[in-house]
Amino acid sequence: MPLSPALGVEISAVDLCALDEAGFAEIRSLWNGANGLAVIRDQQLSPEAQTSFSRRFGPLFGEDDHFQNSVQPYLLPGHPTIYRVSNKKSAAGESMGRARAGSYWHSDVSFRAKPAMASLLHAIEVPEYGGDTLFASQIAAYAALSPAMQQLLAPLNAVHDFRVAAQTSGSYKTSDLDADDFDGTNRAEHPVVIAHPESGHSALFVNPGFTSHLSGFDPEESAALLDYLYRHITRVEFVYRHRWRAGDLVIWDNRATNHLAVQDYSADRYLHRSTVIAQPPARA
Ligand SMILES: O=C(O)CCC(=O)C(=O)O
Image (cartoon, rainbow, N blue to C red; front, side, top):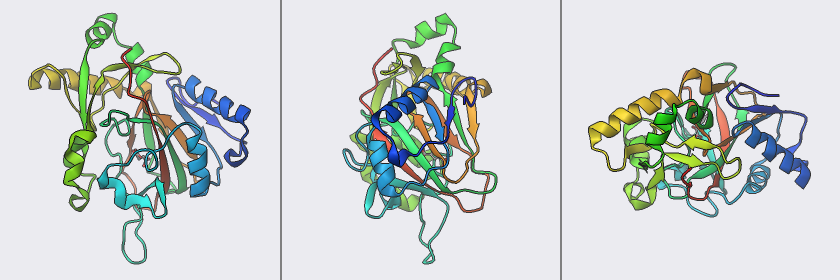
């Protein structure tokens, strides 16, 4: 069932732990057809089951490449591919995950030369209401630009830097910040308009979470153009707002979407994320 005109498909009555190749190919095709967002309901996924399902999309952060050091404290002990997103604390008072993760629009790991392809987020405990996640289609956002703006953006590159989110968003605790994360590996330059390798669609690839500037422009020019783009890419008609149910597995394509987690709740919220590594994005 489609979830919104811009993106998203809901899939139910499937057991991801018992999915043959044809079933996986169908999910992947529905996901691509829905501009890179699938909501799969009612899944009971152990960390092992989530990891092996995620691997069907490609290599994983935590296994084939490392996550940046600042998120290491939030990986599930014994499961380096599972990143815990949570506001919960253990009985000993320790964080059970990263609180306030993704409180800004972003595309996961866009600051790496090989950023994230799919992110798979499994809801284990969610508030009765609040804690929604917004997803914006960057394919729809690109398509809605005038031909003149599309032409202007076509040759441009942007620099993405982990420092932008880590030091400005307030969502990383000062104690988490790791100087080694501010080196060359967590800074990358990508085209502003990328070609989606599976669907062939053009998508905008900038986000206020991690993009630091447009290459070759002076800072004022870069800020003015990015400011326009950030308003454009999050226009309500490109956005689907996901209200979580326990058991949801939401799969988003970071090459086709930006997302933001709404921080409007205090009840317990606990989710497991696995993250597939992409190839370097290619210019459209
Ligand atoms: O908590 C959420 O719903 C999403 C968190 C997020 O932005 C992320 O995992 O990249």
